Image (cartoon, rainbow, N blue to C red; front, side, top):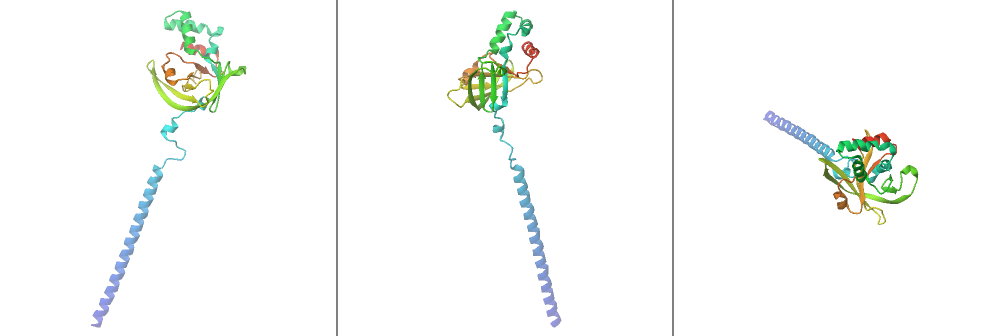
Length: 226
């Protein structure tokens, strides 16, 4: 009888130890699973969080007038040079018209009321002559980005960045700027200026063009005759 009692007590103690061990293993397993789950959630949150230096697509797409920073010559300032005149003969042949009409049409397309630009940050100076002449500043103002507009022209899509002056005394309330292009030949950009965006967008065939001061006569000729 005593033997049976001892056996029973021993069995009960063993059972308690086994149960305790199982509970510990279960607790350890649950803790590990919880830790894994928390780590996975943290990793997912980290992956989903945008990098601090990443900008939203809409903000990254915004332009700044500083994108055109530097000194620029009005292309129209080259068009009466004797060295350039032969280009209009070539242009006339391409357009199947006479040389006079070809030149008049091209001058009208490039017509501009100022000779150069100096752009620094958000500030634009409109110059009477090329910047290297150090001549008269006919107006200046700060400009801020407002919109990006795509238009169709000659079967191609053109993009205008729209800027508005921040001061009431600005010579032009609105600037339309095309991205700088032509780096492989003649680095230049097209712009429009005035006081009403919609009116400027409706202009047909008017593309004042600005080039780097280092541009050569041959580059201008190539641009006219392309």
